[in-house]
Length: 194
Image (cartoon, rainbow, N blue to C red; front, side):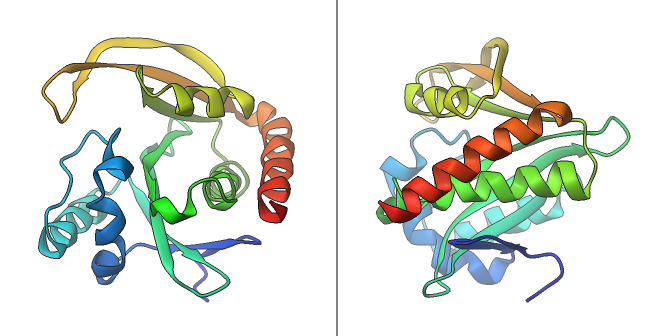
């Protein structure tokens, strides 16, 4: 296992590479999985490789493939991006999972591992997440985890259908991390036994 991998109970986050394109393409090409993503949905494994290459070229991004521990299958991806070590902050996003994994412990544990990496290993002071104003499910999940809704960036982005998206921002600070960690640990434990 690479030193850059992050190991949990249900998943391992491994550094993303273009070699993961074929494994990630089925979920990334699923319109329901990709519904809230701001970037175009890849139409082929070749486009998936190009998207991953573009993500990896961004020096302010740490990209991971999510590998399920029971069978080592790559079931999704997530990133720490807009990483600014001087300002001690980053965002978490570009996260998606194969639809067969929805409702399991995978997303919650991926967040747990990324927050731990950001706060405990990188020593960041702040992590933010943003979501589409229409993505109520995501907003509820972020609130349940104890993240603070900071506000809304109005007409922030263009959705894939051409409409304008408001982005809701949520954050967690280093001193709030222990409480969020406990909530994530409890959520992972419940979902792992469900």
